[in-house]
Image (cartoon, rainbow, N blue to C red; front, side):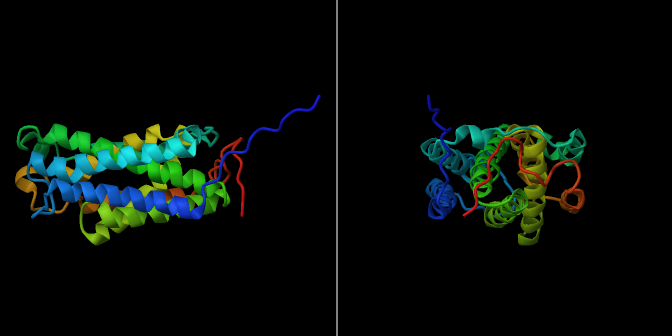
Length: 260
């Protein structure tokens, strides 16, 4: 009796992968334009601005990427992976979470207009979920199908930097540093956490911490402090320096990498 070999997962063509990323960005942008709010300040002065600039665009982006992932049929690979790196790598996501909590401007959030904090929390959660599904989800899985693990990781880091420059808070320099640094630490978070749950939590916490310095009466300030940006950069450099340790350069056990 012959046995049927296991079906190989569908590899996403380059054109389709590019279409998913570009389409996701365009959908989010169009919804933001439709909402009709153009910020006159770097920060978020009121609930209407939060809903228009964060909640609505990221909700639309999330719906788009969920549909794309479902059509691809790789939802399990996108959301979960074997957890086989050394437990000491938990130090990175723990440090990110502690840093986000410590540097959140609680006083600014406490004195923000009614409803702004809850709207901001929802917006940060949606931004984290849809961005992680695209970058540490769809893009990472697609790149792993073609490239060795280190190259796939670098690819998602560069994409993270580009997306943050286009859509993130703060000055262009802040967005570039935060985008690349979070690309590194959130990749580590996916590996050590065995999927997207930990990166989504950390992404939301970092976004909330950055935005907390530019809400309500402080909306004229740039989101993100030097301490926050430098802290993320230092953590990212440390993670890259230690990448050879604890299995971080190996693909997760059981996952196949196919090259062109």
